[in-house]
Structure formats: structure tokens, C-alpha cells
Length: 164
Length: 307
Image (cartoon, rainbow over the protein chains, first blue to last red):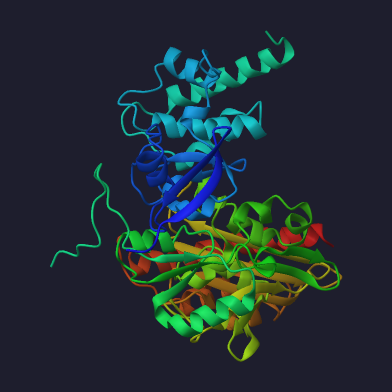
């Protein structure tokens, strides 16, 4: 077994230190070392998007990032999407539109959609479908998910015009 | 036999076999490590292929060398006189978000925008796509038609290899012991030139090419003739394939449907496809013809826009 390495990173806005083996993926670090179990393992090979996190502003599959690679970086997981006491509009709309069934893909979809809205606040349906091509849902189907993202985009837009 | 080192984590998923990780800051450090470790070490750029290979025990190694801390590997610069310098670890998104590169090399942009999904494009690099040496790699045909050159560092210094000579077999390249890919250089685009890459997959996104075709053309002042043309194929041979005879046919007369049909037929003749789960050989050969005509149409239109 190789030596554990000491890593410092910013995770969901908080400076975090941990030890990990080089062979541990970021997903394994999040779940096993930091006990942030919102990010899910689906395919573990970069096809399904269930483990999606935002790394320095870019959407990535955490199963395809090694723990040591996040030294000095900033990571947002599904646990960092809501504000204290209030769901993010994406989370709220996923509930309202019933855009989930078993829920395994949901954190990945919400994180992916968050990354989309961060860079494209008013995406078209086509842009949403293209962006979410790297996320797989095997029970609900995609229409409700796309509707939830469209609804959330609208709500985020309304909020930025009339901040509460 | 059960490999005790390759085990399941406490909550159930397959852990990778142990290896060490280093992120050197210089090319010389990488060459030194690769020279000592040989096949037991591998370069890590975006990780979208190598991590999967290690996890699935398709590749056994002791050391991953992360090259993303080396400035040369992360360089992306375009100059009208000197062309494009593309660090081997530059991820796809940095290429397609660069407006100068978008204008100068649209055929490369076609490919980097369709590698994987957004998540993969955040990490996967063109250099990594090349070194992984898949016959179906989407970014290699555009590199070939743009006459890209591989800048390779090794124990005896730096050498350059034309990209069409880089892959030698599925998963194998010309890289020798201690060598690794540092950069790709692409010559500046010529006036009245255009390029295009298209692949066929049975769905819209996130799939591996059944066939991929890239082409570049440079037109004469009348915009009715090609003065230079290159055509490259993916997923129809053990390596991505330059088809010089198709390029030669395209400069042999004014651009007509007949000329394009002739180039398509030569591309089909050069293809040596296998039959597998993605398509049988006849189907692939048919697709080479269809896609060659489509990419030529698009590349010629782009060349006229540059005229």
C-alpha cells in the first residue's frame, strides 16, 4: 500500500484537510473520508454523472479525479448547493416536478444543472438536454428533469431581478 | 486468484490497486521518472481513460505522473505566423472556449466539442486522446488533416513526429522508454482553407465513433479547385488513418460531384474496418463514403467563407 498523502482543499466553502491514498478517487474521498455521501457512485467510469461535482467552476466526474489532484482546489458537492435553511431553486423544482424516482442520479443532475445555470442563466431546452447528456437516469426519464431545470432557471432569473 | 491489494472499500465499491502519485514541475523530472520506472509508470493528464483502465485492472502500474503542474503541458497559444501550440494536457473546454482557436481550427473544434459529455470535456485532453491511441479517437483525424506535429521529450532530448505516424496499433504509440508527449503544434491556417470532422454514432451524444472522418481543403483563388487536401479516418483501421490518395484525387480537377465521389470511393478503399458491436465492416465502409461527402461539403463551404 502506498503512503497516504495530506491534502488541503476548499470543500463547499470550507477549508478542509484530509489524508488519502493516491488510488482513492475524489468520489471515494468525499464519501469515505469526508462522509459527504450525497455524491453517488453509478458507473464509476465516467458515463453516468451520478458523482458530478464542481471543481474550480468546472463540472467533473468525481470518480475520474484522484484525491491528490484536488490539492488547493475548490469543490462544490450536492451538499453545498442549498443555502442554510432553504433549498436551491433547482432542488425545489426537482421536488415540484417530481423529477426523481429512485434518487440515485438526482444529486448528479442537480450539480450538473447548477454548473449550467452558473454559466448560462437562461438556457434553452436544447442547451439543457445537450449539457445533461453526460447524466443518466434509468427510471423517471428526462422530460421532468428538463422541466425542473427550465423552471429553476426562470426562478433564479426572477430572484436576481427582485432579490428577496 | 484473489488479489488482496485490489479490494472493495468498506461501503462496497472496487478500489484501484495501489500506486504512487507525483506531480512534477518540469519536463526533465517526468523524463527521469519514466526512464527509471519504464512501463510501471504512466502519465496522467485528464485521467478520463487512465483512471478507468487502472480501476478495471486493464493496466497495472506503480506510479501515475500528473503532468498538469508543468507549464509547457498546459500551454495554449495561437499566433498567425507560427500557428497553434497545444500543451498535451490542455482539456477540451479550454480549446473550444478560445475564440481565436475556434476561428482558426474549426475542424479541431468539431472534435473537442463532441468528446464525451461536458464533464469529460472539463478534464480530457487532446494529448491524452492521442496517447491513448484508440482507433476511434475523435480528435486524431482533425490533428492529422491539420498536419499537427507531436513534440516528444525523452532521455535524448526532444524529437518531433508527424501525428499520423504517432499511433502504431490500438493503444500503442511511437513513445519509447522515458519519452512522453509535451505539445502538439499545428501550422497556421492558410487563406481559403477549411476543415471539418464528423463521426457517426447511433445517438446524439456520449458514444464512441462507428466511423469518423476528418478533412481539410485549401482552395485556389477562383474557389473552384482544391490546391491542397488531406483526409483522415477513424474507427476503420488499427490506427487513425491518413488517406493520401483521397487528398491527391481532390486536387486533380475542379470540384464537382464526380470528384467528391471519387475521393469518397478512395477513402472507402483505404478503410480496413473490422466487424464489432458498433457495426460490421460493410456498414462501416458504407459510412466512410457517406461521411466523406458530408465533411467535404462542410469543409469546402468553410474554405469559401475564408475566401
